[in-house]
Image (cartoon, rainbow, N blue to C red; front, side, top):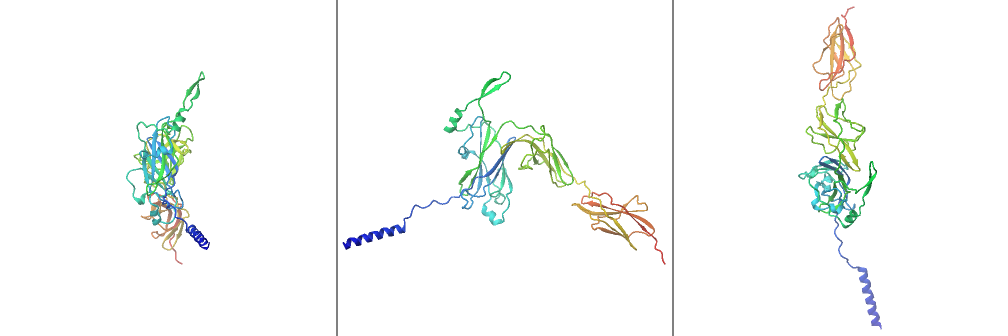
Length: 414
């Protein structure tokens, strides 16, 4: 009996020891970070071009893991009129990749500068990969442009659900004037191009797709009139007229040959009929304007006239000096005046005349940069009239200051 009891105790101890040690399970799969989806997608359709604007992912699907983002791939497909809206998985096929946005590695940003910065805007137009340091960084706002391919679009390979829904589509009965007869019409979607953007990790793992953008190919709005460019000393202004007062337009800066900047001067369409911007004298500026019809985050733009250009010239003089005072001395006449405020001020010229002062002559060859001038060329017994003008760096003279008169009397002894 004692032997049986002892064996039982040993078996219980072995079982308890096994439970305490636990059992190893299968190894956990390695962590595979994926970037989050690109956000804030918008599109502009102008002629044969589509410009996408989007924000690159700044974090991963799992925020606890370090971001892994090598590029963002753009998928696009044109579908014929009447096609149902494609599902995301129908767009995410290798043959639908139309471009990629190479992204600067996050580690490079951290090594270059650990100070957080606000997102920047970069333009991507395709071609060879940009140098690593010039690529946009995670979180940046970028634009990507393509020329829409021509040719007959290939119909979508329908899923069973799409085919069933398309077959069950009911016609609309539309009254036709003047008899009011009802005519059946089947709703048909326009031919359109569909876009999605997907972040890709360093190991070519695709993250979730962005929202799908639908760019319809239909009627375009009427072109606005030719813009007029004018400028004052502080701003250049573009003005225009539209057939409908206050119709929204987009102002785009171009080169003289028509090469456009990738981002409009203002992201939102403008309805005020004018737009102003700072400028630099001597630098040519060219603009076109387009009428805009917005459909959510997609805008359809009209054609535009040839670029209108102007090279502003500095013909704007500084203000006239004020507060001129003449202080006669034994040998000289000292002139003092108040400073003139002008960003391109070069200095002042002192002018002098004799007698009535109808004709004033410059006393200085170069502009005086101080606020006073001592005239040591006066003669006794002569009346002098003085004035001062301000001049800018290109030589524009101001109006004359107020005149002051000084009489150089002959000194008399006691």
